[in-house]
Image (cartoon, rainbow, N blue to C red; front, top):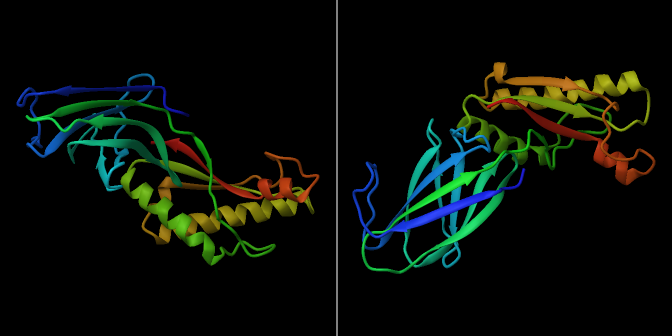
Length: 227
């Protein structure tokens, strides 16, 4: 779901909060608080600030209270994004002035990530459950994401178009979901966090009357069971 809330403030003083990092004359301290729309803190979320001036990225991972800190150079505008499965979601932007003194900026972020995500560029050999090599980059990124989100449990949902026998399609989609599951296990993700389920042709997201629609229906989805 898209972002709906954004807030920041700049304080020209120091030592107002207990903190691990301290602002300097060159670097501003950015204090980040991430929560969902019910104000529940979001732990182990990756927040990214990217400088418009230099394109350099600054990242932090929120703690169990949804809190994180970054030191970033003054005098730049920063684009804010957060990492989700498969991509970085743009949030908003804010600027830190080139001012004398110690600057602390407080950034509050509220969002709800999508619970179902279609994995891009995950492909299998024709009529088989063998992953193509072009799938590895996407699945490697998913594995790294799950290593950050240490308590996340997902369902790997396999889908086909409606060409051929429905029972065969369900069997094929199950085998393909299990292939993705096996790949993630080999990359260090616990089997208990991965549920593989094939739905065959029963949950189309597009028409099966043309090839473009059938291609959309042949997909692998990730459904977040718990975070």
